[in-house]
Length: 351
Image 1: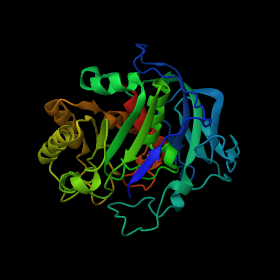
Image 2 (image 1 turned 120 degrees about the horizontal axis):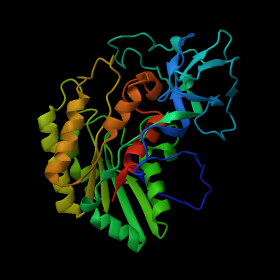
Image 3 (image 1 turned 60 degrees about the vertical axis):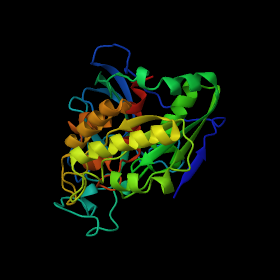
């Protein structure tokens, strides 16, 4: 389905407190606030947050991503969960109200496929954690793409309408975000709107969930041919990476071809962005996403277009976190916090 969404920024937005170190040139370890980091908690086992060295008494665990959700359950420390402030872990108590992830059909499964667990999902098992750490680090390194997005910058500064078109797979389409405005593409458009208030930013999704760059090229006219973008966010890789999918070298060539088609037929600038690895125990992944992320960056260099490194941001989180805590479908779709991590990679792009 093609989604056309004109963003309305007159409404009140939820203010998410967050100390951003991106591009600030600060040292790599510093106090930092993290909003709504997701965890799944199984039995009484500890689950790791992205950072350790938590500040005593500055941890909150709730049942909904948005802090102002009227259906939120605010869980109680030492009654529902126990925090190890030094190691940055949280675990359930024996009488906890927090859902036990060990009851999820995915739990403990190896080499699983969605057809074997058709109704399984992680959403009802997530908890969302606000916390302060004294050991914070940037979510993404500063990413200078100024020379590659000059037209977009000029048009944004001039004011008037500015149309972003997103073209990719189900992740680019917003897969597993609990609300449309929590998709990373929507969040990034809002971020740009805050930076360029004179401009009326519109975002239009033309993605093809479940498909790869092969269909992206073959079905061009049907899906993106009639759009009129100023900027295209091009996000592929998850389906290309699957078993019987597109090999990394051909994937790179396909991306270069797509960038060329966008420039020639639309006159728009392009941002290529990498994907993240699906669950290691998913049967249908080749588990070589590092090669597809590298191919995406190489394609951007060859095509001389902008690039956003989502893979490295995700990899940083996985150095401590388990994959299930970030995946809405426990396979290959980010949850709300995962979409927020995408946003951090995009916000690190300077242009």
